[in-house]
Length: 176
Image (cartoon, rainbow, N blue to C red; front, top):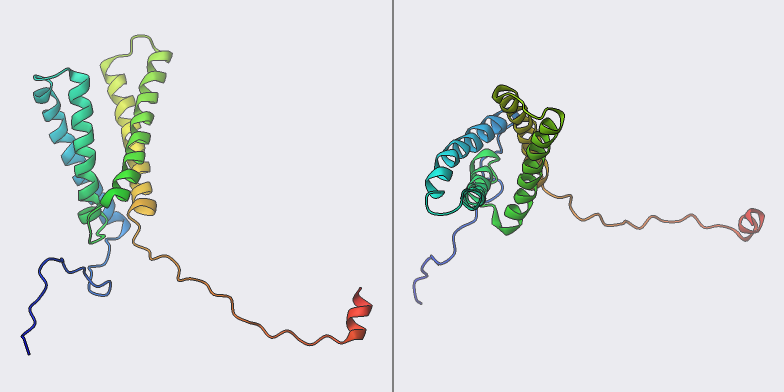
């Protein structure tokens, strides 16, 4: 009989009972801020450097896509402690929340410039950072509750047969 060797082509998936528990809401939020903020700061330095080789709007779009992909992986593995990478579905769901956050901050700036034709830099920064903070809180909730939820789906509900009491002919004819 030949000795069996371990199959190294497949990575072992952690058993649900052996996986580390997901962090609580406060710990996850702190991780979210650290990961997202860290990548955001790095992105703010990367955009001007990439913009030296291409138009600024294109550089911003490229860095935004790359930073969103990176953040999604960090949130899956570290922030929400899922124990696995985000995968295509996670990236698609995350991109939806990132697009909504972008739309919210853009709308805030649009409404500011509609209300005041020449707002001060302090006013612009206050509105933008407030909208970013609110969008970030919303994005955190979407990612935690919908994208990287650690709750298991409910097991399939199977109907059980309940014995029906026999009805006499009199009871049926009286009811009708």
